[in-house]
Amino acid sequence: MNDLVRVIGERIKYFRLNKGYTQEKLAEIANIHSAYIGGVERAERNISLGTLNKITQALEIDAKDLFKPISETEQIINKDVLLTTHMNLLSSRSQEELILIHELVSNLVSILDKNQTNKE
Image 1 (cartoon, rainbow, N blue to C red):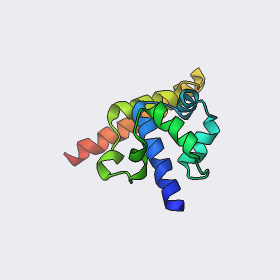
Image 2 (tube, rainbow, N blue to C red; image 1 turned 30 degrees about the vertical axis):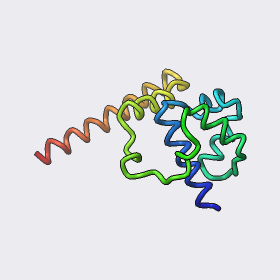
Image 3 (spheres, helix red, strand yellow; image 1 turned 60 degrees about the vertical axis):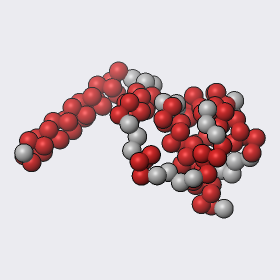
């Protein structure tokens, strides 16, 4: 049973991210609490069929898609999804926090660029 709960949680998260939804956005569309979505995605909560139906409708997917493990190809989330996810994570941060995050990311990109140059 635990494996099924884990697989369903992973699949919900996968489809949610591919839609560019935060947990809050999915919860709002499905008319359920966002903390519940988080618990389901982390396999901490069992999910009723009614709630499963609400989530699949909100994600515009078939329920059967939730019952198969994520393939290696599906694990590679495209660049647009990653950028949207990061935008959602950062949108509630203060200007000071965003400046700090920008400096950290700039430094990291600089290090990655140097490493790439050294490999060539």
